[in-house]
Amino acid sequence: MYLGLKDMAHEKLRYGLLSGVLLLIALVVFMLAGLANGLSNGNRQAVDQWHAQTVYLNEDANQTLSASQLKLADQDRIKGQDVAPLASLSGTLRTASNGQKTNASAFGTTRDSFLMPKVISGHRINGKNQLLISAGLKDKGYRIGQKVRIGTTDQKVTIVGTFKASTYSIAPTVYTDVATLNRLKGNPITSGDQQPVNAFVTKKSHFKTQHHGNMQRLSIATFIEKLPGYSAEQLTLNTMIYFLFAIALAVIGIFMFVLTLQKQALFGVLKVQGIGTKHILAALLTQSVVMAIIGIGIGLLITLGLAQIMPAGLPFAIDWPQFGIYSVALLLAAVVGALLSWRTVAKIDPVVAIG
Image 1 (tube, rainbow, N blue to C red):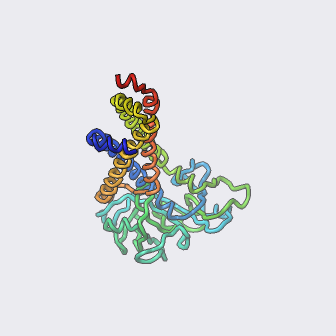
Image 2: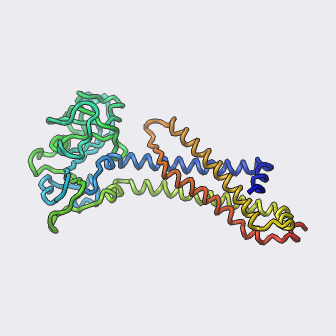
Image 3: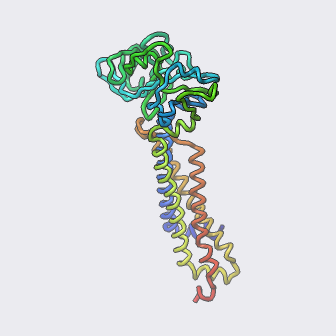
């Protein structure tokens, strides 16, 4: 270990350059991970806030909420606790004068449903044509008491309260009751158990009988995986991260291999003095670990700094356990890269190396 550190102190530029390369790799890994987390949260945040376990959809909907068509009466097929109907609509939230326009994901459920978010300002829905909006929309200028429309309909609803920030498919969410949402969608049936809904969401439930019509039961994890574009988005970004791990391993491996070839004479002298292959390899491992720690540490600090100045609309989220795993993975890549020089070090003949 002392031998490796002394060599690094003697050749600061060479080892500093490699630390810089590892810093850039670590920075890109952390930035991609943050973007992947941000996009993931933007797609699924509302679903996570439901604290649900199961979703029931139409079996012909290809496990997609927007394509599912059920009726309130279908709830009789489900037995369990906290069964809530869910109707959905994606559209443009606009003021009565069209002065403000924002994409939004609208959900309709019963007024006393566990899906209805907790109000942080204003009041809960207690009448027709009322709407709760995410705190993110309040920050964009929407306010309590304002009349708005969703989608292409001329039906107006009044904002009566706000709840903590929530997004679904990257768009901020709004909540209302099922009847109001059906009016916004232009559905002719806005009362009774024949009202259309998209799904039923539950905390703990099962079908009452084996005959459950055209309904399909999904775990909440499967439902999230089937969100439009979610899996492909995450797979793309994670694949890029995994390639960066491979690049880090290759960079360390090539550097250490070239370094070993350049220092064969020195290693030969060390072997003549009685320093074995294990000690030389330990020195190389020490150098790799130190360079990796420096690169990863500075890369993480830069990531944290950039996260503070990023635009509010950029989906970026830091997941500390994940960042810890990626840091360890980069460190292991550095160790494996150094170990690739083991055979070269072991095969050095002191007589040949010294010449």
